[in-house]
Length: 135
Image (tube, rainbow, N blue to C red; front, side, top):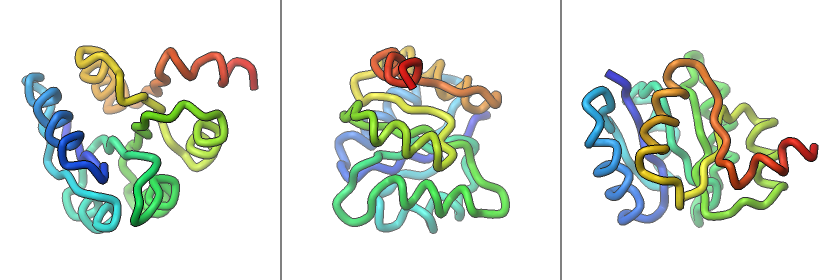
């Protein structure tokens, strides 16, 4: 079973992701929270994969990412955002994100992405791939 934590400041987004991922028989959302509680919640539930919003009002996702990556057993983190700005993408990848997904990702692609991340792979939304290729 792939254990997932969802960190987003919007309850509706967290609920939607839980519902989408809940359709997969091999994925379980074990935690969801806003940014302020992210590090403690994630480390307390030891998920395999974290879907982490990059922009939140109380703490930004890049700060959470850096704190999670510094943990003794860091989870795999994919940034999840409505923004495809190059500066966020580059900063997230430099900080150790294994993926960068836009919030308009197709539900089936989201499930496949979580499986890829849990298996040790990396994922990039097709909308941001040109920015990576372009440097």
